[in-house]
Amino acid sequence: MWICMVYNETDTSVDFRLCRDFGLILSILSLIYLLVCFPLGLCYNMLLVVVNLSNKVSMTMPDVYFVNMAIAGLVLNLVAPVELLSSTFTRWHVWEYNNEVYITLLILFNISSLVIMYSTTLLSLDYYIERALPRTYMSSVYNTKHVCGFIWGGAVLTSFSSLLFYVCNHISTKMVECSKMQNKEAADSIMMFIGYVVPALAVLYAFVLILRIRKESTPLDQDSARLDPSIHRLLLASVCVQFVLWTPYYMTLLVHTVVVAPGYISSARYLPIYYFLRCVSKLLAFSSSFAMPLMYRQMNKNFSNKLQRLLRRLHCRDQSCPRERSTVQQVVT
Image (cartoon, rainbow, N blue to C red):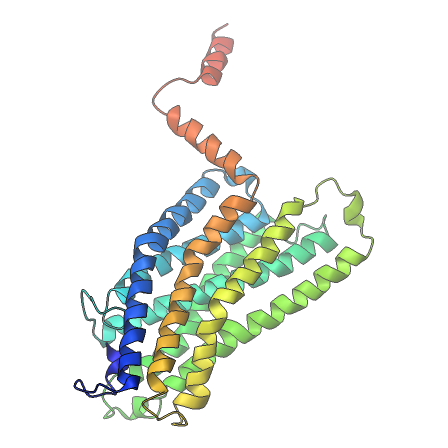
């Protein structure tokens, strides 16, 4: 594997054996993900999207954000097998991809990560608005749908700046414009700041406001249209899970920018460890594509009812249901 390329193939040292062990562990983890996590994530993300979009009338503000995260999860599901079946992650690789495919996968990964992180962040802020101002409809489903559109647009625009750095890092230095931008660390710094630091600060601010609201008496206590109490648990769980799964990846970007790229880590002993941890952190990031829909399925009380309504409609598509027959009889009489 490429994390062991710093050693000679005939080397039998302890460090080389450790590197090969890292490669074996990474191969096993990738295989487990592809056999278990990938099909679960694909099925549950599609189920979450289809069930909610088929019940648009009953969708709430949190549902819209979770549908948005599920769509981003489906994009991650497309990227994951291409990367995990390459020599970067497994000994038993199926293919090797060129720089163009690498850049495409990286941009799709970055867009998905931005959409997931900012959907989680805005869910926290909109939940606070709903708790503090329940009758203003500022966090309505209609407004949330437009916000999610802006999230995707902002993610694409943000990834475009990183795309310039990555593209210029992989083409010839003869182009003067690109020779000045051949700095992958700059792209990692952009993603670290916009994709992690800003959402983390915003979520922390939202949780401080939510805790303050919970301690104070608000008009929400007498409001009959308050959010389901389970939404608070779902929000807390989703924020914790997303940051637990994505923090290691962004920390490796920080380490690469601050330590590895300037050459502070040049020893062959530490580079394989860094590359191994970076691959494991990316596996954890991929895991968010199945952890989130599973958690939504278990903690959202209304999801089962929506799924049952969808199944009944599918069952009644080619035959007349009892409710429909009674309606027809009333019309005839």
